Length: 120
Length: 110
Image 1 (tube, each protein chain N blue to C red):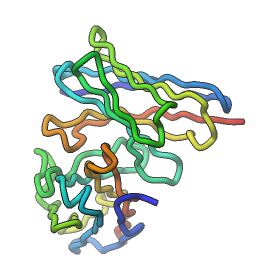
Image 2 (cartoon, helix red, strand yellow):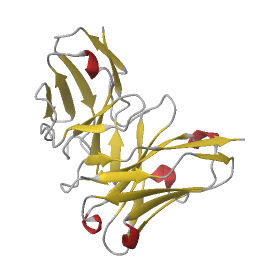
Image 3 (cartoon, rainbow over the protein chains, first blue to last red):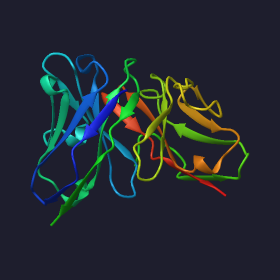
Image 4 (cartoon, rainbow over the protein chains, first blue to last red):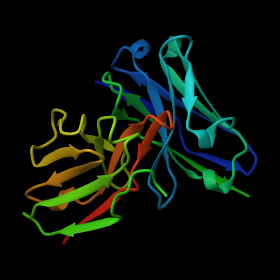
């Protein structure tokens, strides 16, 4: 069965960076796009970006995160990563890795989420 | 301010039928298929409806979706207490070159 296992909770200081991992299993990793979505406390879901399974992992980011977020993938370990720099308290949120459906337009499996807490 | 507009809350009684709306524009809902997600507290969101009106296997037929021009709807019939959750619509936005979510509707089952 499809599983997306994310790394554990992180506590960071303002200005620091964080890198979250998401290990995928139960499907052919090299044929699916992967997304990252976050949810801040009391807020809704927010799409952050997508990384392609092709061409070495080309990523496209929501404009809000351009320049501050880097998504990468390691085919040998079937793991995707999301690194965010310049953290502020506004980045305190639960971050989800999500598999893009084979039909491109929707998200079919979600990781369990990783809580990132940023304090000053 | 979300690109897709959803009412922040809704409520119903067990057995009732309830609908949620999701309003967008020609560059998102008007151009691409809509999906819906159920988000229970402390859990990861799960896919309820994709491609406007398609239910993944395992989703009860009490849940149904529809789309018309630049709006979409999710309906739940035979409301149950376990349906109490947040519901989000999502769609690809061609102008933004990415995906967008609605702000979510919190369902309370009275």
